[in-house]
Length: 603
Image 1 (cartoon, rainbow, N blue to C red):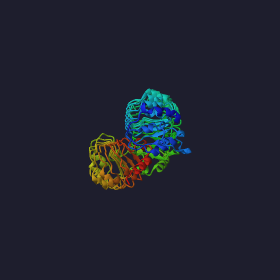
Image 2 (cartoon, rainbow, N blue to C red; image 1 turned 30 degrees about the vertical axis):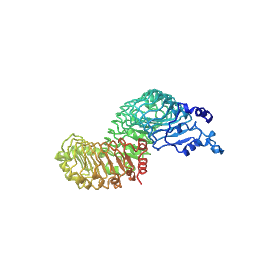
Image 3 (cartoon, helix red, strand yellow; image 1 turned 90 degrees about the vertical axis):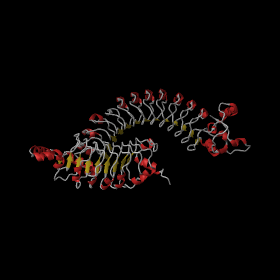
Image 4 (cartoon, one colour; image 1 turned 90 degrees about the horizontal axis):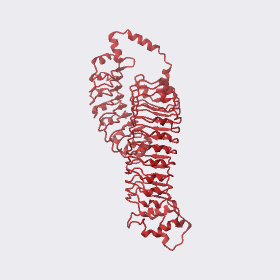
């Protein structure tokens, strides 16, 4: 709207429908004057409960200086100054926007995120030049139909509202390139989304979606699709035809199997962690020729196919917390693999100390085994057939060469004395008693206190940790996941060599205080509990801590001081009810989260 066109509104203002209120929150004259020159006005973080009428009328009203009989320099000629194109009203207390917003038809950017809006004016549909609209972090439960008249929109941010549905009219936004509807209450999305042929980035995370429409596959330009934290049990097979897709996030759903990707030749990142996937076969891998990140953590995988070798560009493979007991040696020949995460798997074929040396040493070990002669295994089988009964008992429960005592996956409520007797004279370093029904830690475990470094008591019915476990002074790795634990005894701080502790899927309501006193700790996995807080100042004392997983707890806030834990390389906080850091920051990774927290430490 030009100044001359606007003059007709100015002339009729006293009796018009746009009559301003007698009193309004003041806007500094300097800001208005600058906005008339630049076309941009930023009123964010001003505690505004309403938008001053002078803002809506900025294109219509002549400035105060025009009432004086003075000469104007070239820079002060108000009648030649630009219309408002960018308006930022973020982080205020606005509950509504006036229909007078139609007086700003030149707007290309409108940002009203982080307010208290429960509705939008119908007049918003008249902002025909609008290209970017951010109405996230409000209280919107529905959207006006006029919103879909904004056909010039390229970016639309609707995340963190209370939307339960989206109209089919959204399909009219054919120029839209970025759409974020995450963190709402959506149970379904319209099939007309498939008409958004220009869309590059689509974020659906943190909703209640049980399925995705097959029409989504028509988004031929889409590069990123994020449906994390929903209730998806499957994805439409048509998804495999999205030829431009580069990043696919399906974490924290209920998927039991992966789709095949015959047309996704450019897919670089596939994130399907925290699902219920039990099988990964060659059919899932053969078309992932460009994949660099494959994240499969927290599933139920029992094995990897040898065809993993086809992923020649793979740089990061996350298999954390699965049921994998062995790895294909071919994994060692992946030329670009830089990060292989295996924590929380019942691996039997690879010693723990090899895993602890890092990815490169592990790959080197796998390569060394590729050409290993199997003759030795045949000889071992023949010898076993001729052993005496007492030796047979040892072979059943104890591997002398691997220094392993194993009595797992037997649904046992006690460990028979014969198991411990079989280990007599063997310097046991690893004890695996997982996947039973043990109500407590066997007292005889203390017999290995001089040698044991690795204990797995996961998937049992433990309600407490006995003091016998606290006597294992050389213990390095302790797995207590999927039990009924609510606390740890302070005596566990005697385990001064402990580097890794897994406490996921228990019933902790507080972070175990004893862990703050074990300086050797490098990895703490305590996801899926009920913790409400964490002491960042004590955590800072764990100078070797590099991995902290606190996903899916009850953290209402994240202390800014956690950002001072500069050695953390992996910090996982998703699935907690805190408001800050927001999901967008969490999605950017650990470094971004720590920086965000450090910037909020009181000075």
